[in-house]
Amino acid sequence: MTFNSLILIWFDNNQRNLPWRDQSDPYKIWLSEIILQQTRVAQGINYYLNFVATYPQIQDLAAASEQEVLRLWQGLGYYSRARNLHATAQFIVENLDGKFPDNYKDLLKLKGIGPYTAAAIASIAFNETVSAIDGNVFRVFARYFNLHLDISESKTRNYFFELGNKIIDRERPGDFNQAVMELGATVCLPVNPKCELCPVNDSCEARAKKTIQELPIKTKKTKVSHRYFHFMEISDGENYLMTKREGKDVWKNLFTFPLIETSENESLPASFASEFKFEKTHEEIHVLSHQKLNISFWKTKMELGELKRFSEKLDAGVYSLSELDELPLPRPIEKYLNERF
Ligand code: SF4
Image (tube, rainbow, N blue to C red; front, side, top):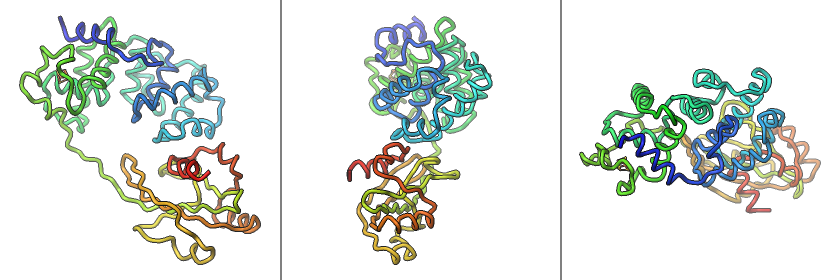
């Protein structure tokens, strides 16, 4: 039997039962694909179900405010995905009569939809024979075909895409793409792949040549920068100062306690520490894909009048505890509040 038939039979019998499977609605496929980028399936399932329940149609998502969408996204990280999701929903409703483009080329023009997502939607929803290459597929192809090419290079990505387009099943392109991804996610694992359970182990070249552990090859390491954040919990005991993050930086459009960033692991700058007595309450390290955030939380209390005066100085809003519940918050702030209240 061929690679295609073996992998499709295996997929039919072994695929995980996930809520977005057996779905041909491009809106829901798109939601699941965006949520699952950089997110584990176990974590993504609840977010997917919440999004579908809150916004059953693309029109519902487009009509929501960005703040509501970010709030529902809270905890998933990579918030640009949520902002793009919202912007694209609005674009489709306003300009495309609420209908998703039905082919790879046009899907690729939408904000937040790259080659992988466009191919996943086009193949699963519209049966287009276009290969969806994610990290799992890189691994399976690199090993099965014993390809010693550096996957951090764009020419390698093109090579895999062309290879995928050549071998993709013409009858069931969407299932083929999902089958290869599923194999990578559950059997052809990065460390200790379960080759004995693999439907294509007889013809796997890396297995025959004992090169599995070396593949895939990825040379470029992500550069991680270190940053030092000081969050200031400033309140009168009932109301809190919060600022909305603007500009091109992490957590854009989310709300945090007023923040001071220092270039090294210093204390709170004297200009703040001298006017009010701040006490350090908590420290943690929060790791993002390209940044390691060294976070200190500081706390001070003041009368409501002072709080309002201070809010102007810091360009912050005054929020009661219940109002904080409505705001989209980055994970460290959410965790901090949950632990304290
Ligand atoms: S035999 Fe092993 S290395 Fe080869 S594709 Fe299957 S799981 Fe991956």
